[in-house]
Length: 520
Image (cartoon, rainbow, N blue to C red):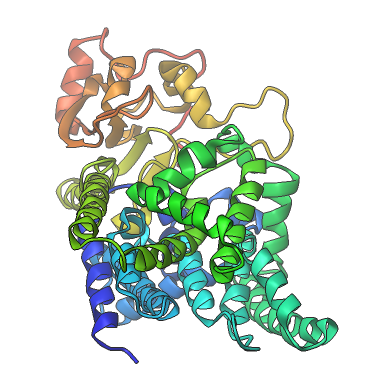
């Protein structure tokens, strides 16, 4: 079963662990290994989603078990806590790759497209629920009964649903097709297969979530209530309805979007000949349509349809290559590898890497600061909320604070989250939220993007820049090109500085200092 092809996929996904060293989205850390760190070691930040019960503990619990095992053997270093979860996910993705390969009848084009997919290489080893969702989708597709009555595919589909409820969307057309073509009565299939498997899987998932939440929780219902009924997702950004067509799907597919469009045209034109491709294309279109109706859109939401698009494209290229010249086949393959390789290399090694590079430095610095001053470090992140990982990458119970950005869950008028308040007037926020005296109560370290530095010069007057990490070639108003770390002068230097000058104090005077303290 696990032949050389499987181990080839393992090698590719493990390689991506070390070659993809950039930041993608906050959920990779804040909804998985940060939660696992909290479960395993008792400290770590839980975002509002966990208080509201809209996230399932299934995925983080997997990593929490790994963390506990490392702790038993005294191997729970920050390096292993960040590396091993990615290796575990990489192995799961590799197994999903192999199942995809089997589903595609072990064609060379399927293997080639999957391995050369820049997007799957970029996310296949990330600790994202969307990555797990896509892996489960691949596994389920490989068991889908195109010409049989098997229902094994329902198990990974059900599991994926309870991990992330929106993962069921691509399966609506496929399940309707399965029910329609089945020789069993519809009621029997729904009750004895769909409902039974759903209830058994749901019982397990609800039990796990309720145990960790401390009360009976149906996280799937809460997820849909907040994200669909209440529209909380729109708080994190909105896009026009056509965004997935104009940017989302083309970006996820990369250069492969060109043969995919040709394959889609051929599939629609000869839909009676390519029935399997037609159902899959219908599933892709249905998913894009449903997601297009939601205001908040992200590239990662389309990951579950990626294997379907690659299957359609691989099947088309396999048929096309029978008639094409060898020169044309090689040109096509080299074009796909070159373009996708450049995209994977740039996004994985260059773009948005500073917010990850800074974390090992902070972990080392926090330890050195404690050893030197016999006092724990206090780290303040003045950047858009969730711009970096947190305790999962530092693995020290030090004080850390970031700018919060919870949505308006209580319908407050004129609501502005903490991050928005800060960026509207950085120094005003500093005056209201950080102490003036004593200086030792201020954060020992400040982490920020270079674009913010000119706006908080007064605050940084008793800090010295220690290190700068490249982040991106495309800075924005709030996300700069470099991540900078500032360290407060030691006690003697700080005292000398405060006694010799009154124009460069860390925080200008405030009307009322009594209630303003550094509050993590």
